[in-house]
Length: 259
Image 1 (tube, rainbow, N blue to C red):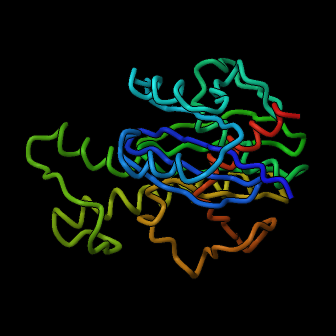
Image 2 (tube, rainbow, N blue to C red):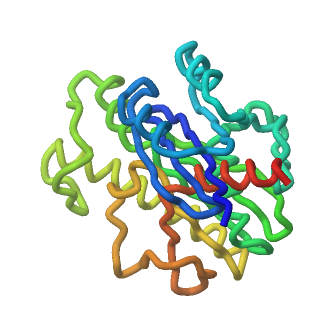
């Protein structure tokens, strides 16, 4: 059997994720702070890739561009509004749309064709993106992430301290530290619940994907939410947790353009 190894690189605000796909199967993933780290170089040399794709939420520096150009395989740069994609993009300003947002939406939709899909990415920012049952990306919203909220409270007040998101989270703060942590974490939780409920009120069949580096900080109540394999959610809400949603979407875009 001929292997179809693909290199997928997702450059985020805080780290770079590199994934090896064989077709649609994930073989290995690594996360590095910069492309020059030994781990990334070892990863590249470990596999005999056929081709690859990359996207970025930040301005790429000369070193990264040089790194990609020096690879011995053809690399596609995914740019929303320019690169052909397997779903229809209804965003009114496609060239300003974050590549990671659209890639995540595609990653969720290619495995659930004909479904209404809400993608929630909890990272530096929290994004909410929607793909309808006709395979159309309708758009989404952007909200401050957990760390951004914590830092903003410290930066824009004179007395509130900068605290960690990790720690005790009571329903109501018992100190300034827990008041900040509980306010931010529970505020994000209720925000996410609000978006989910808004879409459930409109659509009887809905897939909800949760991804992003900060998702583990959300402390979802097991009473209300169950992480489960992909299935429609109705009265009992089930979230689909997929930490590789953006790379999976990039891989689908690469596959679509290699037909």
